[in-house]
Image (cartoon, rainbow, N blue to C red; front, side, top):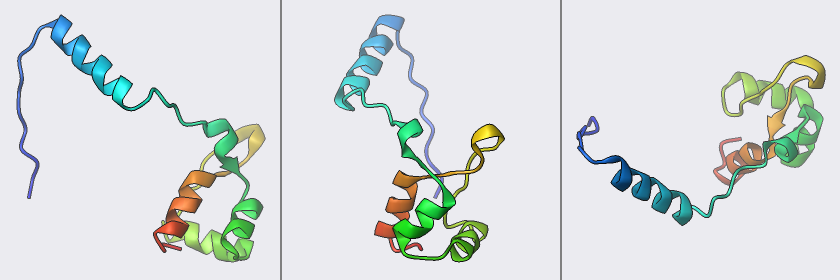
Length: 89
């Protein structure tokens, strides 16, 4: 079933108020990605698996690996914990 699309006409003031209300209802919390990064070794220890098993889980698309450059590749701890909670890994 596809999502129904709706076009709404409004003025800038009402739109600004609506956006402000939604942002305030979410608590203005921004994720802390810098402190959420963990290495493959840390992620493997966190889920109680070996690094080669973690690599297999990544290849299967059950976890996402990020990054290049100086810091190398990493995973997000929040995503690893979420996958663990949902028994996806």
